[in-house]
Length: 359
View 1 (spheres, rainbow, N blue to C red):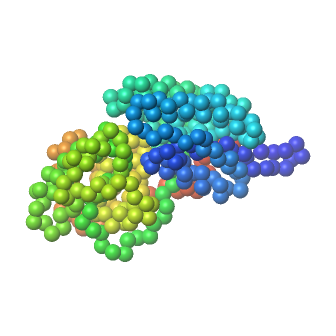
View 2: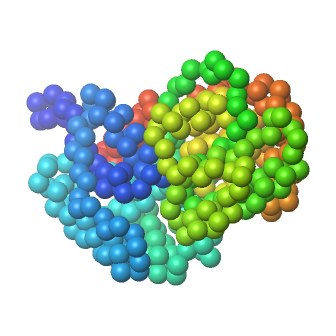
C-alpha cells in the first residue's frame, strides 16, 4: 500500500487460520504452510486469527454447532476484526468467505466435491457447502484454487471469469534423495471419507497380497489417516498385510514417502491430491485413480488405474510391484515434476492476487 507521501508499507492481510488446527487434511496443511510462508514476505503483514475452537465431531448436534460457529465467525466476526485491525484485505483460505466486508476479500477454494459427488455427503452439508461456496466465489474479489482442475470447476460450475481466478499450488518441501533402497511398502494417506475409497484399496491390496504369497518382496500396505465415515470399514478390512497407523508426525510421514516403493490414491475426486504431490517430491512412484487433479499432482509419469473397481486396482498394484526396477527409475522424473510445487511460487501468486484485489 502507498501512503499520501508516496512511501509504501506492507499490505495488511487478515488471514483466517481457523481451519488450520481443526483437521489434518491437505487443506489444513495448505493453510498452515501458506501462513508460515507469507510471514516471511516483507511486503506482507499477516494478521492471523483463529477464532473459537470447534466442537469435537460426534453427532448431528456438534455438526450443527460447528456450522453455526462457522457462520458467525465468517460473516460477523471477520468483518468486524478487519476494521479493528485496519486490514487492507481479508483472505479466507478455506472455501467460505464473508458475504459482506469493509475491505476486499480473497477466498481459496480447495475443491467442489459436494458438486461433483453429491451422494458422498449428507443433504444438509451439501446444501450448506454449495450455497456458501458459490456465494463466496461470486462475491470475493479474487478466487484462489489449489489446482487447475479446481479452477476449471469453479469457472464452469459457478460462472467465475478467468480474470478473477488464480491457481496457487500448495508448496512441497524439497527432500533429499533416499540413500537406502526403498522398502517393501505401499503407502496411502488421507482421511477415510467415502470418496477416498480406502476400503476398496484395502480389499484390492488383500487380493494382491494373497496372490503374491511366496514373493520375498511382497509389499505390505501402510494406511496413514483416520476419521471419516468409512473409518469402521477401514479397520474391519485391515488384514495381516495391512497396517492402519492413524495420522503420524510430519517427520514420520517424510520417512514413509522416502522409503515406500509406491504411494497410492484411489480417490474418486480430489481438489489437488497433496499426498501424491508429496510422494512425488520424495521421488516415490505413484499409482492414482484417473482424475484430473490426481494427474496434475502426480505428473506425466504417474501410473494410472483407468477403470475403477477393486479388481482393476488389484491388477494395477500387482503389475506395478512386479517391476520394482521400473518404479525406482522414476525417482528423478517424480522430483522434477514436484519442483513446480513450491511455497515461493505459492506466495508470489497469492500476493499478486491480494494486490489485484485492492487495486
